[in-house]
Length: 247
Ligand SMILES: Nc1ncnc2c1ncn2[C@@H]1O[C@H](COP(=O)(O)OP(=O)(O)OP(=O)(O)O)[C@@H](O)[C@H]1O
Image (cartoon, rainbow, N blue to C red; front, side, top):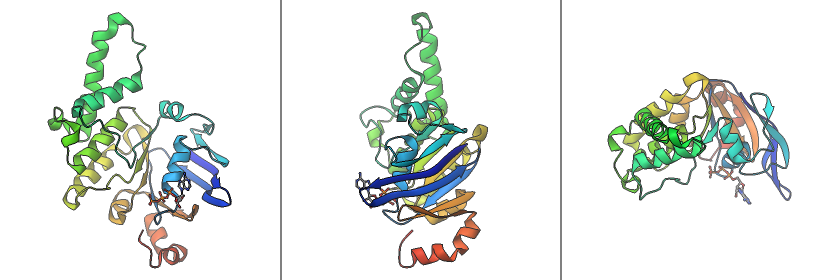
C-alpha cells in the first residue's frame, strides 16, 4: 500500500534519513521506534512531502508519489497528525472538525446543493467526533480540552480527510498515564477500517507493543530492523543500539 524505496535525506555530509526501504500492507499497523534524533519525524516529513528527499522515493498503491506536494498526497489518502498541535483553540471542537471536513471536500459544491452539503459536512464531522469518543465535548472550546482529549481531536481532524494510510507522530505525547488506555483503544479501533493502514512513531514501548503488527527500528537515520515485535525485541543489534539509550 505504502512503500519507501531508498528514501534518503542528507544535509551536507549527514544522512538524517538513510536509504530507508519500508513496506506497509493494507490494514497493517507499523510502529516506528528509535532514540531521539534517529530520524523518525524526518521520515514522516519525507513520506508526506513536507521535505524533499535527496534520494529515493515514496510509493502509494504502487504509484510513485515522490514528487507530489503534501496536499496532493493527502488527497490520495495519506493523512498525518503532527507532534505540534494543529487545533484552533478559540473554536469549538465541532467547528474544528467541520472546517477540516470542509477543507478536505473543497468548495466546488453547486449553490443549490449548499444546504445539503452543509448537513453532510456536519454529519461527517459528528461521525469523526463519535469515532474518537469526543461527541459529548462537541461544543467545548478546543483550547480548553485536556491533553488526552486534544490528541483525540487531532485524530478526528485526521479522519476528516478520510485517510487510507494514517501517520501518527507520537500520539501519546503529553497524555497523562490514566488517559493512555482509552487513546490506545481509539487508535486500535481505527486500524483496518476498509484496509486502513497505520504508521506510528511512539516512544511508549507498551503502546507500540499493544498496537503494532510489526516494528521498524531507526538508528542514525537508517532502518536497523523491521519485523514482528517478538523478533525485533530479541534482535541483538537492536539491543546493542539501545544500550543506555531510552527508546
Ligand atoms: N531542518 C533540519 N536541519 C538540520 N537538521 C535537522 C533538521 N531536521 C532534523 N534535523 C536533525 O535530524 C536528526 C533527526 O531528527 P528527527 O526529528 O527526524 O528525529 P526523531 O527521531 O523524530 O527524534 P525525536 O524522537 O526526538 O522526535 C536530528 O539530529 C535533528 O537535529
